[in-house]
Amino acid sequence: MSTLIQVAYLISSILFILGIKKLGKTKSAREGNLYSAVGMLIAIAATLYTVNILSFVEIFICILIGGAIGLYVSQKVEMTKIPEMVALFNGFGGLASFSVALSDYFLKTQEISTYPDSVNSVSIIVSVLIGGVTFTGSMIAFMKLDGKISGSPITFKGQHPINLILLIAFIIAGVLTFMNPGDPIFMIALIVISLLLGILTVIPIGGADMPVVISLLNSYSGMAACATGFILNNNVLIVAGSLVGASGIILTQIMCKAMNRSLTNVLLGGFGQTVSGPAADGPQIVVKEIGVEETAMLFDSASSVIVVPGYGMAVAQAQHVIRELMEQCEKRNIDFKFAIHPVAGRMPGHMNVLLAEANISYDKLIEMEAINDEFPNTDLVFVVGANDVVNPAARTNPQSPIYGMPILNADKAKTVIVSKRSMGKGYAGIENELFGYPNCLMLFGDAKQTITKVVSEMKEM
Amino acid sequence: MNADSLIILIYILVLASYLGFELINKVPPTLHTPLMSGSNAISGITIVGALIACNELGYGTLSKWLGMLALILATINVVGGYAVTDRMLKMFKKK
Image (cartoon, rainbow over all chains, first blue to last red; front, side, top):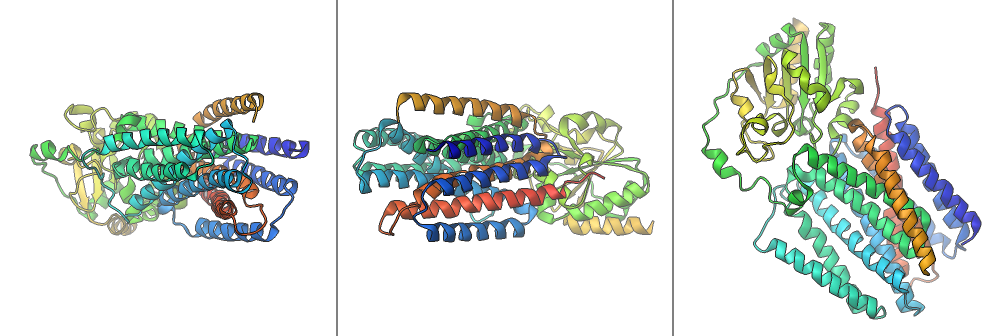
């Protein structure tokens, strides 16, 4: 490889690193994204310049197709659907690395019949495994998020032994491929096993755990790129791949911590299934309802309000009308803030994006640790489409499956109003004690419709 | 590949991962979603591998077709990832 291309790759690696660094601050984040995009452009241009382009037409057409699809999706996707899009793109990244690895394998063994050396073989095998698992795993995650298949955990007898057997089979087939690189039969076995493993490891994981799964698959897609870097002896692939791998791992850890679960516990799956029995036997919770007018009056007389948004807000598309509610409150000099739980929504930071889209200033969005002490001094907490993240059982009931999970102390406020479609349970499938508390009032109905009515009541006051 | 160049690649892997952990630990939760879609775009770096893989003459080989598939997918990731991240970050405003 010429020095020129090495220098170009070095520059793009630096731009990726600077880009991620700048992405860490809200003010410079957009610039950081641009840095990283320029880094990518340099890497592409350098690659095109150095390889003697033999097939300009195909390369041009593929880039045109991919670019058009990417641009279309990125402009059309709704902010509520970002988790689905990220899951899909993780899968594409995995499949791309998977294909590059296989392309290299078939080129070496079938066309030029120079067997890949040992480092090369191992890298190809690892790349096929990670790429394949990322691809099918992400497709399942996408279908679960999109409601194409049930979001609840799919479990069956012998699930874990099957996964273990598949993993062992992969190792055996891997060793055989390593010893007979020329025989595609073993490679085909590797392909099939890795694709199956991706499906089987994600189907038992429930909808509430999706933030963890997406973060983990994000990490895998980076690792897959990294493994491809080892096949092609390419530094920039390794640098960029490990940055993404590290980022995904950190987000995975944050999500697990926010749910008080270990990664193993999440991956083994089935959470929220076994708990329905004992929870249903508990005392029936008696709730108090509140109407739209009284809600408006409570807002009007409060001097401080904290909104706790959850995925239900996204489903009801209520974020814009909540901004109107905020404007009404601010007109009355009411202190108005949002409390964001780390696992609110279906991916890390999902609520922040939705509220930003609704034109709500990001300094109004307060993290859990920073806001939890403020609840006792708050007049009114408005819970919109959130459930488990405000369930006091996490603090008080050692029998509860969510016991120990850090929650927002909404129950400590003077009054809590919960906007909810019906008395259904949260994603974890458990009763919420908060709803029966004396200071808690239920505002039933579609969040967008009821809040719109509250806002118009307030306008008339 | 000889042992020396493998060691260098492992050096790069270890140091870049460490750097990644240090950098991303500091990203505030507000930016986690853009961070994820942005890293989606970065993982599209496989596009470099795809370009090399699809650069063959003729259409008779499996490896060429796999390379073309990889190129389309990686381009979707790169273009879509950067564009959607920019679209999101544009919305983050402080008043």
